[in-house]
Image (tube, rainbow, N blue to C red; front, side, top):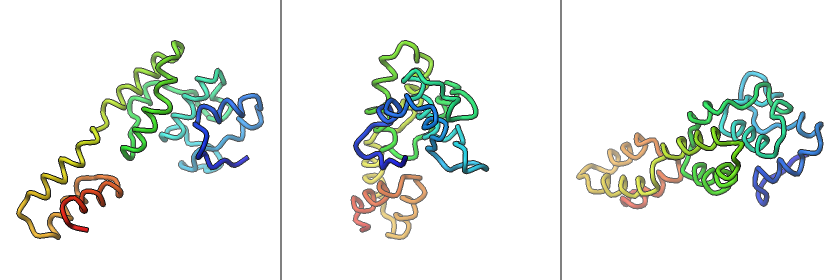
Length: 162
């Protein structure tokens, strides 16, 4: 079964296949790690899928080699502000309401607290734009800031660098 995921949240997808042990055993959410036939179990997709399996009352060991370690969620790094937004809007509310997931909820709260606010790119654009540097130097600063590609484009537009 392949899904594009556009219209259904991860938690709902898990609930939809939860009654089929074979579907859970064959569940693949990532292709990282040495064995691409198995989920790596440590990337953000794997960790959040483990959380959703646990929220649905399912044994995450059906799809993963090891159960969820809440401490791994503390180190969860969002690759973009979009990832953080999705976690905060779609997964966090359900986890926070589930008393069985108190440790997981606290770990995700800490991971979300480490994400810079959305105003950082705007402030960065203003600061870089105010520098009296030639255009190539300003672009190099934008790249060095470590922003995701979409945000780098926004910052470049804001500072007049196309």
